[in-house]
Image (cartoon, rainbow, N blue to C red; front, side):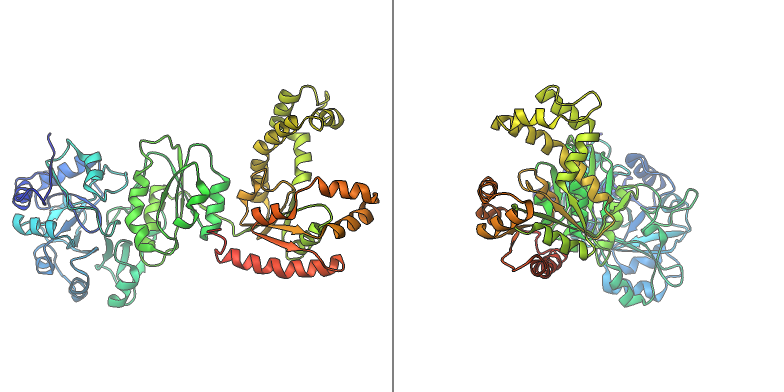
Amino acid sequence: METKIFHPDTDRGTVAAAAEIIRRGGLLGIPTETVYGLGADALNEEAVRRIFEAKGRPQDNPLIIHVRGADWLARYCRDVPPSAYALAERFWPGPLTMILPRRPIVPLRTTGGLETVGVRCPDHPLTLAIIEQAGVPIAAPSGNTSGRPSPTTAQHMAEDMMGKIDGIVDGGPCAVGVESTIIDLTVTPPRLLRPGGLPLELLVDVLGDVEVDKAVKHRLADGEKAKAPGMKYRHYAPKAPVTVVTGAGRDSARYIKHHLTARTGVICFDEYAAQFAGHIVRSLGPESDGRSHARRVFDALRAFDGTEVSEIYAQCPDESGLDMAVVNRLKKAAGFRTVAAKQQIIIGLTGGSGAGKTSALRAIEKMGGCVLDCDAIYHEMLQNNTALQRDIAAAFGRVFTADGTLDRQKLGNVVFADHEALERLNAIIYAHFPAELTARIDAADAPLVAIDAINLMESGIDRLCDFTVAVIAPAELRVRRIMARDGISEEYARLRIGAQKDDDFYRTHCTAVLENTAPDSAAFEALAARELRKMIEKAKSGGYCHE
């Protein structure tokens, strides 16, 4: 079948030709403010059958009929309550579908075998004109192959329906981007069956008490009958499996970042997109902008098809306003596969010998934080991480004994005498270490985690952190502290400090520095606790997202 694309700006006879397709029982892609619909005469059973056939849609998944206005309600619905007219007066044309008892003129094939029918008046001048000229209601589910993300442009619809239907009217991109809100007016109190382009809060303004159907947030059980489109089956899904990550944006971003593989795609808010550099990323817009999320969610889900992405992680908005609909679509795209991100603050702590890092870490522990010592973890990995052992042995020969113990002296003789060899060893360690550290962070049952790492930036560990802090101190103070702590000579203490990074490195590369000029460790611990609490509060409010 040849599918004609109508361009109303240049095709002056678009409305008449489109209405004729509907009248003769054809299938037509129509633009609305929500998504593009696959339309047919709602009263023509054969035409409606072809909708199900073109979409591959289950026969018990009911269709919505689109009407010219509230004056058509009584034609196709019986026992229309005053609340329906009140809703129509306020929200039609617009993204609201009302479930009402059907009149016999509406075929059961259209309603999925139900004695009720979903009715709405779309807010798009072209489609309203087509309905008017056709003189019949148009049954129109979203114009995608069943289960796929809904189309929000004519091009999206052509991807799924070209060659299967008679025509597609290109009415431009959809303004809302998610399907209509569905409210069941046959029950008391009215029940929200599907969140959509009209927020629940606005329905409550008109109706008062509104119940939210369990299918909005949970999968319907086998055998349960769907009363509205999209309630029962997996919907909106791209080809790669989706996992929805709930929680505050900073927490869900961290979870995703910790679980990325080379072929992971990411759907995220603008504020966190830079954290996923090197991956295919689609943004929903700013974290607080529900309208942007609604406009972009289906585009984002479709964007990964045709790529090498093998899995998709999606940040999940909260459920207020339009975001209730966005959350519903994301979870259905994922088949309700969700992960709740832990609320954690991750601090990277670094600094040279004698600066006072131990006092800052002690302050964090007293706040209830968990401290991960990277040096200790590295030495554990040398004992039990076979992949790390294998790569070190491949690079440096027989530096492990028969029982798997590292001969430190033998390896040291190689790397400490050769700068390039030391760089190779560091590269091997840095390739293995972040995954191990990520597992330790995930296992930490604490809202606050501090990573103690000398080579915080060089290893890439800083990318796992909400913010990084360096503890610095004047060189003369450090010399005296190291001499007293380690029982070494002044000359050796100065050599150790001279071999370490200078303060300018930390000021350039870390989020913040804590300068330790306190008279003793207790005083610096108290100062560090005060400053770290301020930084933690800033991180909780998202203050470091753009830094």
